[in-house]
Length: 124
Image (spheres, rainbow, N blue to C red):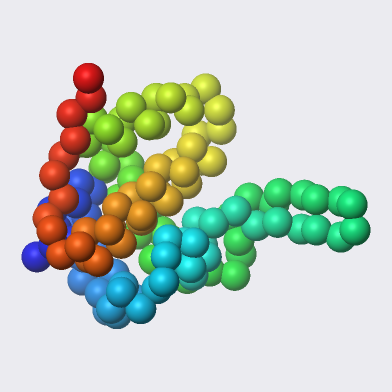
């Protein structure tokens, strides 16, 4: 199974993703999928005022929680994800883990669209 090759995604999370989202190829790009899952940043804009509101409340909360929990496991097992987490370390931990979740979500979409198993990267 392709989803199980991604670090952090086990049998329960993989079956949850497939049952709740269905075929991931129906999403055109990562922005559409991230907006649906709820790991895309929310923006409030009125006239000249622009405010970033964090994650969107209009989201699929179960899948978002799956990816947040899978991100904690991914930073323990994948050196690339761990490096990304450490690069942003020192900021708010919750906002950093949402960034890692979005990266994990984009890698999940890439694995499904290319139909190749995920390979754990190595940092130089």
